[in-house]
Image (cartoon, rainbow, N blue to C red; front, top):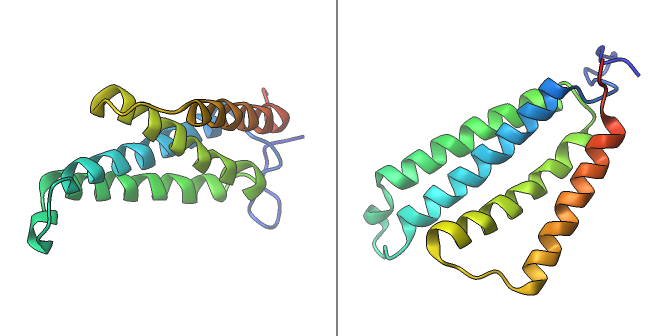
Length: 129
């Protein structure tokens, strides 16, 4: 498989650079979600939701969306889209580390399954040349 674009604008394989972009997109989406959560917690009035954490979270999430769009233009949707599930793992891990939330056994098993599934998809689509 080559990484050249076909007429539909998608690549036939996943390159290391594209894999890095997918991970960056996941990190941006998870980080944005985490910032929105921390900026929203405890607020009740609509005006209280307008703060630096919520704004930064939205900006980071938007950056991640831009990265996703780039990745979708370079690889099949069936390869790119599963990486969105990685954000669930990153958010759960962030909540555990920074907020003291305790994941359940089901959460941990789910995270392992997500990472295993994404790893399998990435490995099968990877082009090392």
